[in-house]
Amino acid sequence: MKFKENINKLHSELESLYGEVIVNEKFIKGVSFIEMIINEENKNLKLEFKKQDLNSDEFEWNYKSNPLENDSQVVERKSSVSNFTNDVSDIFTKNRFSSDYLEKLN
Image 1 (cartoon, helix red, strand yellow):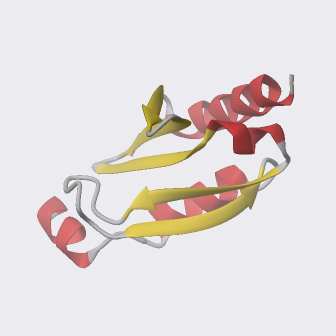
Image 2 (cartoon, rainbow, N blue to C red; image 1 turned 60 degrees about the vertical axis):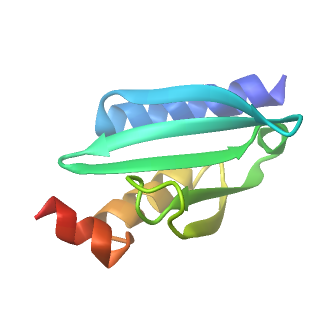
Image 3 (cartoon, helix red, strand yellow; image 1 turned 90 degrees about the horizontal axis):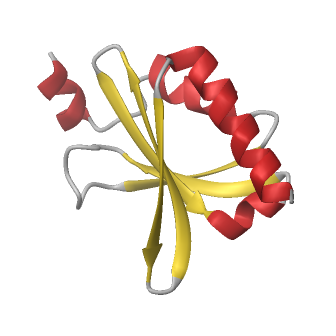
């Protein structure tokens, strides 16, 4: 099954970069989503994607610009399985979070 292969690859690569990565499955209005929570130093990233999208090598995903607030802006991204960790790393290294969130960290 392509999904299992892809989710294991993403999870393994993220754990090698960031240590513990929490993976949860959740259902919203009959659709299955995968949520990943990654901590890098004092920053927290919560991202999610539709489970069915991981049956392909390219998939859409999103994260909240402020993971502390449920109603914060949702940032949509598109990645391939092979460049996903680079895209996640880009969020951390370039601080692609809301200014409110970054201010609370300081």
